[in-house]
Image (cartoon, rainbow, N blue to C red; front, side):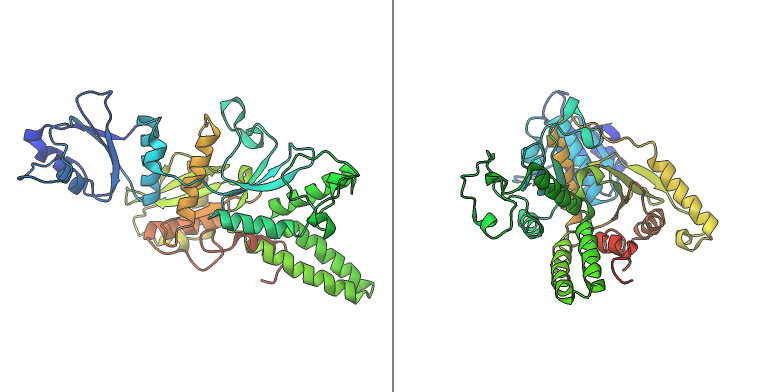
Length: 418
């Protein structure tokens, strides 16, 4: 529900216009019939928008005017375009359960899907998620199938390019048919090029194919670093044994692996592990809005008051003990936030679409910090809160909005130079 509601009387329209803020908001206009279809929208200036929709009409005009039809006005002030978009989505979904998708025109996020239910698993690119168990998502067991999803990618082309380049590094099958292994089957071009273990004609045992699928799964989950470590170890062993030709070949393969892994944006990971916090400006000038992200689902925002009597700049320059206090305040604010219980996979896809729309914008407000091994990078979150509060652009460090998550992971693991 929207947080404010006032009745509208045309003869006293000035009272309403004076009561609403001249700032960004999501609003709803409702007539005398509470069950009737309302008018729902968002605006950068609520007062000006309502004056145009509900003000007196001078002469003939083609502009929409609802002065004689509206009885109630509801609104909630918003501090950012992301907050307005998410609130508009929630409001439209509640008011127009059968038609909200046409009004929103969301483009679902492309995902790489690893199909593990098949006796001979394969990977594909999709924008659809299979149904949810028990009407809700609970960790990794929420999807009915055993499929694993990795994303969101900016476009389908980007997802397909990454999937193709990644699968070139392994020998998992590319075909989409349900296999019935037959030694008489002639195989395909991939088996001829030694790019597939060819389970279709029993070119490998089931155990060998399952092991190869496991390597692909580790590659996706680690952003490529599992294969980087594997090849680096093989290269070092070859060098130790003075097999320099093999070491050179492994080094060339290593460069190919790194090129494939470099295609991954910072936000792409297994959906079950897509956890973090999105920091956005708040309608309250003394606060920022924190949106907890749980498995790609967007939780209701919480306000974090960061205004200080001596100025907000002290957030970063405080002593270590006080900095820890800010970290604890952020943790306490996020702790009681529960992930929304989704009734269908469609809601999950819609949340991902909203997150993808914000993340891949060329110019965006706010910063996203993703958890690594279940832990948020709290020090960087504190710095991000300060930047968002002061309206500064992300710094040129390895913050989630400005940096490359996988390069950060590689550097932390000692795989690249600092």
